[in-house]
Length: 115
Length: 114
Image 1 (cartoon, one colour):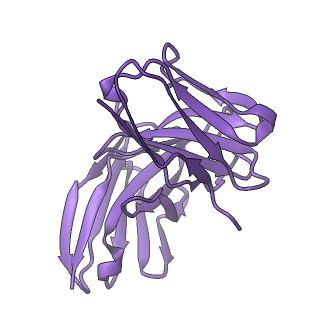
Image 2: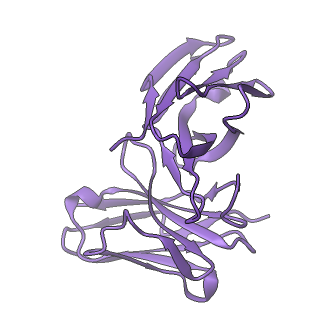
Image 3: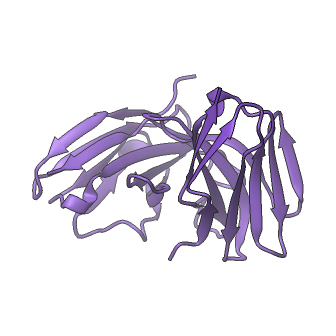
């Protein structure tokens, strides 16, 4: 079974530029999550999708971050404009149903450096 | 607000030792407590998980101990091996109808020396 795919793996941009990350979840998984992992910290949930609807985006900085999951499969996370403090690894995860003790499977992440 | 506090931040043990990583939580609405293992350049992977109605769970060399009254839980790694060197995260799931949202601890970087 293929895992969660993310691209690009690395991205370096200057502040105020825009950037987008792509995630392809495990086939058949209804729930998709985006996390931000700052160096030396645990992942922090940014947004959760159930199919193509948003379940929770309370920690997403909506003035600069946006995410979508068209057709309930792939997802993109965009930052516009980027700030220095956005430097982090952006992890995508998926789970089968999103309920109970559903296991979340993580992708390898995209490491973003904002200069 | 950090809802899950994890300690220590780093830990070094000799091969065969038993590293112990501790976590404490505040929100009594948490109802599921997984541990994740993360190697450099990889995403976290589920290691073992426990529900608060159980005081201990073992899977292979990994054991979770859970103290509901103290709102604390810990991970023990028996007979640790150099291949266990990784960063370990505890997490807690909030029980609501909005979904399966996890709050992670800050992580413990474990090094097992040969």
